[in-house]
Image 1 (cartoon, rainbow, N blue to C red):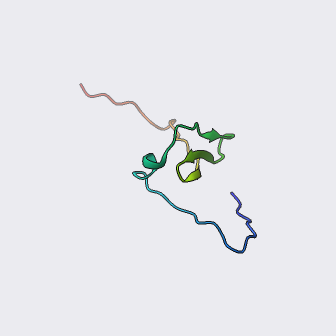
Image 2: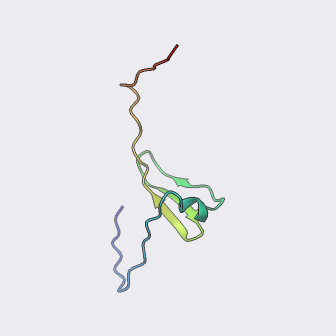
Length: 67
């Protein structure tokens, strides 16, 4: 993401913890772009942008079972 805002006064950015996010979440569906792009979601504080994260590579995993 690029933030090239030329305003004299910049907007406030917040970083919320995982326990805070459910408190500000709304019923609006998130806006998901192409694979690997950030995800936007409407909250009580306005729109939030989340990292898409990394997918788990399941190829080296093995299934184990105890008897």
